[in-house]
Length: 119
Image (cartoon, rainbow, N blue to C red; front, side, top):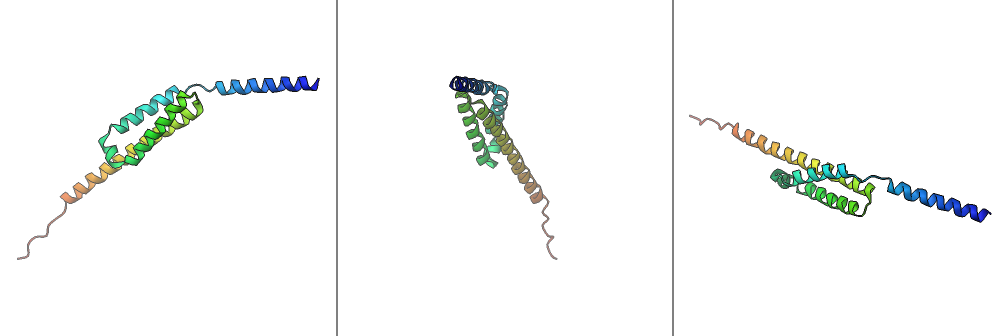
């Protein structure tokens, strides 16, 4: 009798575990946002100039998100997609900082005063 009860309990737990795994919805919204962010940053010449490491990290994370999505590992896909979006935003921010520094240096060069010749 205990053996029958144990088998029933194990079967119920196994079915519950499978149902829990399948209840994670596909992160289609997160995937779309991440794809847009990575594409936007990748197409920016400023990003490729000032943040090449960060944009490559974003692309790598995006690839992992796509693979996880294909494998129906939705929790992993969501995590990778969110990380790819964040890394793309970091790349854009770093590129903006680089551009601002370049502009500041140009302005500073324009304000350099040459000393008047001594008479």
